Image (cartoon, rainbow over all chains, first blue to last red; front, top):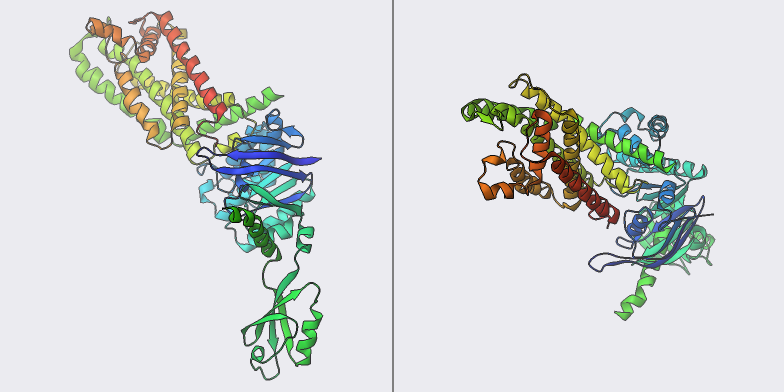
Length: 315
Length: 258
């Protein structure tokens, strides 16, 4: 079953700004789906329409088969939304916020209290349950919004940049939590600026730019289209001389970053063995090696640039 | 099924609203007690003794219902206007918009909050009035209660509509300052309209607050400048118009959806 189906979705704001130009999108039940795009691409508008915060201009949206126009109440019950900006009452306590949200979905107060304990404990906020939300740190506020979105136990969780401004350790723990709840059967749609996040968590991806979907495929398939990767190699020789200035590397494009570090562009057909063979022959030891750029980031930039070319040419 | 969900949602908004104004009781419940005590002291005791009777009653007794009604009007209005606008401003109104909460439930929850605050304030002001007026016998309890509930509902709806349209905090103070206060002061709180010269009596009858103050005064003292049936019909009529307006605005998403 499709968790989300969008057909010909258009949005023109008052003032004439066209945010969506007729997008089609499908997300399967149980998927962990990434919606990527540069600022102003139409991600938040899409999410706003799905969650009824933005009125659409044209098109059809259904969530688990419930139509946005004719079955809005049932559609809303399927969705939990974690918005980009903190939008809870800063003066209410943590537990009040999550219990009230459950109440809006018709969850009886006693049940909501039990669930609030479960989700606040899972998200390490139980100790803060009686604190006003304004007293929480940025990371805690993000987790509060996730707890709030889960309290009515939705089948589809939509997260709009959930880890923005969150430190690395906390981000990793949030990733683990999201993976856990996805394994339990909750479909997740995620927008993010951290492409590493999409690559680590998501199975399928759509890239949106200037109100149009320019790519919609699995992350695996998308990464196979990448022909070349850049590696950073830290090198060493016996006398600790600045080896990068004297070495050679036939058949590869490479650059010296400093005396002991080089960047090498390796095409898929070439393989890394030839790099190591040549370096070994020159008595050079490779101390460590890493990818220069996030692979998905490279693809993302290429796709967005490619998608914009015809428009630029026509302008 | 849907009705029980709506009831829980309504209860949630109402509890949230009551928690809000009770949390800030120093700002919401204490000022009316202080303001009304000053009115009783200055207009009732000091000035009132020189005025004598009004509408066949001692002046102090005459102004008690008007001052209670004035507190009900201002507190109903400001409670809903400030709470709903804050929810818009902080964007926590989105918590309700993403959930299956109908416009009628949102209206019911906020108006219920305004009503709760107005009733508590009415009780406080009534208690304060007992310090100045003894032996007050209530003439018609049913009309008294019906008037206070209908008036509070009406001004709560007014506050909600104001907040829906408001874009800044200034916008929610314009109506109370330039519309509500003049109408209340000219609505017969401190005087009987029979004191007004001919044409002004007719003009005064175009003021809806006059009907509320007089219906409430009738329930309290049994005296009124207007027909009670007409007064109740006017209040109910305004309630219907404002409810339909608020429902239409929320249903269209005016001021809350892009």
